[in-house]
View 1 (cartoon, one colour):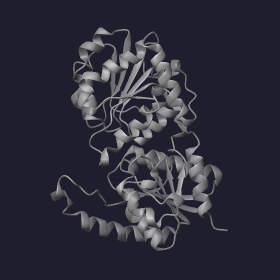
View 2: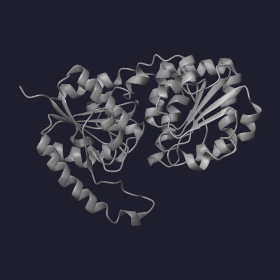
View 3: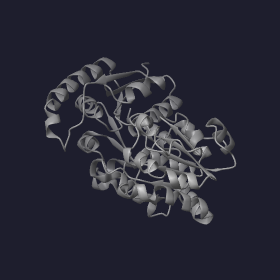
View 4: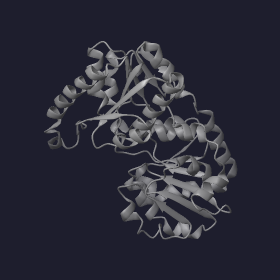
Length: 365
C-alpha cells in the first residue's frame, strides 16, 4: 500500500510557516510513514525554517500583488504564470493525496493546480479577517479550518471548522520554569521582566518606541527588558540609548520563545495570529500593538477579539512611543489587573488545534 502523501503550501511570514510545520508534525504523529512536501516562495522565511524542521521544500518564484505601488506589479503576471507551471509539475511528480494551504503567496498556484486535478484541499486561516489567497481558494476547498468565530462572512459555512491556530510544540507543551528562562537569557531573578518582540524581521514602530523610552526604563531599575529588535533593525537600534541601559538586553532574534515566555511577567508585541495563539497558551499579560501595514487592518481585529474578553491591552501603533512602556509598567504594578489579564487570555487558549486540523486532513483522504 502506498504511503500517504501530503503537500503543505504557503508562507511568507512566521505566522504562516510555524502553523504549517505544526500541522505536519501532528499528521506525522498520527500516521508516521506520511510523506510530506512543502511548497513555498523563494526567498521567504519558509525556505529556511521548513528544512530546519526536517521537511523537504520546493520554492516558487512568486510574490504578492502590491496595492500601494502599482509599478512593482509589472512582473506579477509573468511570475504567476511561471509559478502555476512549476506548481503543476510539482503536483504531477509528487502525486499528493491531499493538499493543505496555510495562506501566503505560494499556496495560490499550488492549491489551484491541485484542486483542478481533483485532489482534495484544506485551507487553514489564522486571522480574524481572511487573507486574499484563502478567499480566492475557498470555493474549491473541501475544509476550511479557522481560529475565530464569525468567519462565515468570508467562507461557506458548511466547510468551516473552528479549530484554533496550530502552535509550535515547544510552546504548546511548554515545561520551562521562570528560573530556567531567566538563566537562559542571563537575566536577574530579582527583577520583573518585560519581553518585547516585533517578530523575526522586527517592527520599526515598536523599536522606535523602545528607543524613545530610555529614560523611563532607566528610572525603573527594578524591571528588566528582553528586546527582540529583528533582523532588519538590529544594527540601527543596538546603538540606541535604550539598548545601552543596564536593565535591557537586545537581541536580533529570540530562537527560544518558550524560555522568553517563561521569563516574562509582561509581553509587548504585534497582534499577528500566531503570536496571539501562543500568548493564549502561555497565559501572560500582554500589550498588543497591531501593525497598521497589514491587509484590511486584520491585526487590530485579532487584538479586539482579546480586548473584548478583557484578555489583553491594545495600544495603537501611532501611540506606541507614548504608551508602550507605561502600559507594561501599569500591569506590573497593578497586580490584580495583571492576574485578570493572565486568567482571561489563558481561558481563550486552544492547545489541540494542530491535532484537530490533522484529523480533518486525514478525513479528506
